[in-house]
Amino acid sequence: MTKKQLLAPVLTLVAGAAAYMLLHATAPKPEQREGNTRPISVYTATVQEQSLALEVVTQGEVRAATELDLVAQVGGRVTWVSPEFTEGGRVDLDEALLIIEDTDYRLALSEARAQVAGTEVGVQQALADADVARKQLRNDPGASDLALKKPQVAEAKARLQAAQSRLEQARVNVARTRITLPFDGRLLSTRTNIGQYVSPGSILGRAFATDRVEIRLPLSDSQLASLDLPIGFIAAQGEALPVAFSAVVAGREQQWHGHLLRLDAAVDPDSRMLYAMAEVNDPYGKGASVNGMPMAAGLFVEAVIPARKLERALVIPPAALRAGDRVHVVNDKGRLDSRMVTVLHRNSERVVIASGLQQGEQVIVSAIRNAIPGMALLAIPQPGAEVAAAPTAP
Image (tube, rainbow, N blue to C red):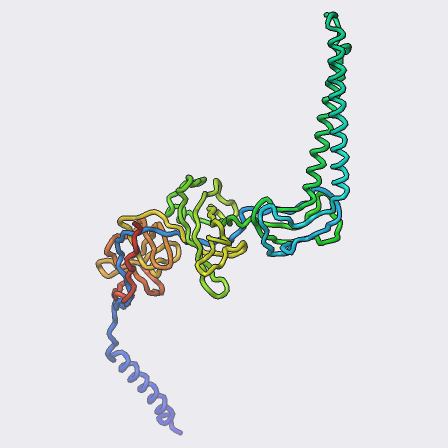
């Protein structure tokens, strides 16, 4: 093979490479964009000014206002048990629940009565003796008290008082054999039964009063601001704030009405919440729901408390409020502004803003990824996103 034949393929490759490089260098280049200025579409709602009455919504557990242990004050065998002495049993004021055998206590009562009668005779005898001594010694100005029988009279009267005290104690012991409640109530638990011996101090059961129940309600700082009440607030007689309670019981929503009595005088150090105390009177009677459901201890209920009125409040939909109390706004140039706002009140329908926004501004209610201040936006009013006007309290 000649030298010319060997160089031919090499020359062909070199020529092809040169042609490719020439075509690549002279080919039209794609149009270069300075940046993607196409605005991002977002749904918005208008910041509105409304007159409204705020409401604070919180939750709490119902508990009896008064609970106590039934404690035996005398010992003995239980001889009678009421049919109502069972968990959930209903008991009226001073109705007997249990009776402890009282034979020994009645014998002691009879003995105490006899002692009183005997000491009364002793007093009469001492008085008679003193009268005789006074007559005999009336001409003796230096007669001593002992000669006049004064110490004997004092001793006889002291014996009578001691006997009367023992008689009263015997009567009390007889009365204590009858176990009752100092209020109308219900039994929470029982710990004894007929025939069982109980000693003084034995716990026989536990009961609670049905005249009223209490609900301890946690309040955040913003909720406290909405109520506009000071820490340690105590409602004046007849001026307690109304509270509406609700809970689902037996598959139906039940509602009750109560009052806010007071606020704690200190913030809970663990939860950083302040607690309010509300009550419902006669929860098993007139205070029951319209369906007749009592507000029983142990229920977990929602509470709605009317708060202060605002004449010109700025409100936005809850969807507009971002994490950290931040709101994204479409400014008048179609650009994104990210604002920190001060929230005065919030619920499932509206967020009340104290500062950071102005009436008429457009807030973003849709999701937006990688929100960058100044980015171009296309605001689209979202149907139904506007906050409906709230009813104002009279």
